[in-house]
Length: 90
Image (cartoon, rainbow, N blue to C red):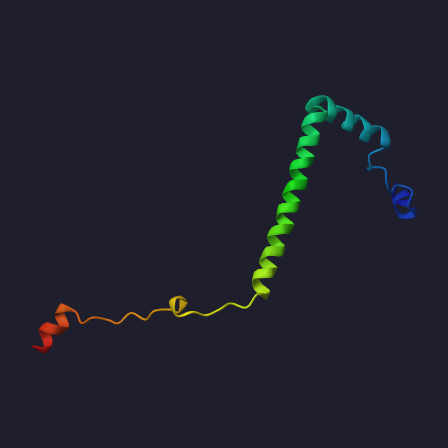
């Protein structure tokens, strides 16, 4: 056993054969049907396309220079004196 592993003869014994893969594919088609599998693959393809579109939009926003306007500048709040401070000073 040890000699078989070291010599490379044991490599690939756990890999599925073509017959096993074919049986799994046939079972999947029987369980889900061709229509559901094709719908699922279409949904996956649509998800990939929308993901790529979102990535492209994010990259376009990052490269576009942002215009600074007065309305978008942060406003600084001025603190009003509290009643306690007014009472202490008077």
